[in-house]
Length: 143
Image: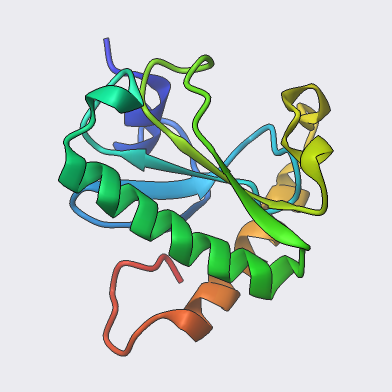
């Protein structure tokens, strides 16, 4: 059975995408730790990050860095945190989170009641910031 992330990537479930290419997708978390919290997910279902091909792991990290740069521009956090927890969904995903302190990476603080309007607003802000960072002719950023 496909993971929930595969179902989002395949369009079977809704997602607020900010990036997509032939190897991965990035979309906002529906239970954000902070506004703009984005998941970078390989299209290939791999359960544990230790099992990722080195090239795919590098690609995911490169995409996460660009997402983080967009978050810095859109949300002006102190830092952007990167975390791989891997307990919630058996499909590798990198959490890219605008943070002001370590407490912002605590899943106990996740907003499980984030409104669709708030998620849409955060996605729009991040897409606009990424548009400013995207190289000419880049078609992968979901603008």
